[in-house]
Length: 57
Image 1 (tube, rainbow, N blue to C red):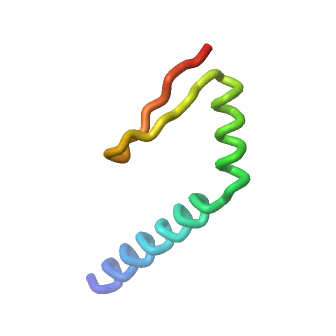
Image 2: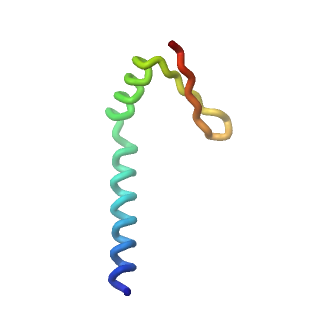
């Protein structure tokens, strides 16, 4: 039982590390922005933190 809990905790920590490293990859963010511009989407962030996108084409 204790080993299963440790495995779950380690998997959660590993998942958080993978996600956090990918969030800081500036090249991926630049590529995503370039693709959204090519497809004609512009995204905005509201004051409450929600993000919405509009088609510009």
